[in-house]
Length: 122
Image (cartoon, rainbow, N blue to C red; front, side, top):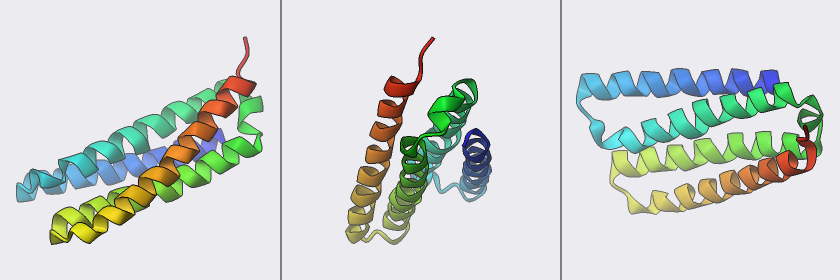
């Protein structure tokens, strides 16, 4: 699980950096919130979670870890993809996808927190 999280974190990092470069080239800074969320919720958060699971391998073996992984990596692209489309097209209807993705992501994060509280011990 730790390796999967670190690999997907690296993917989000590349995606966020590519997006940042494109924003700089095109001066389309209205997408900064998407860029920031991909960096923080994708790259940073998942990398830290991967390192936590590396330090506490029992936590990485649980169903909660698997559920978190999938909910995080379903919710984040839906949330940020919808936000990007809303900003790009100026169609407010994409906010529904942002809300749905946020809720999916949020449930995943709660499962991660429960897993940490249950599994991480000195």
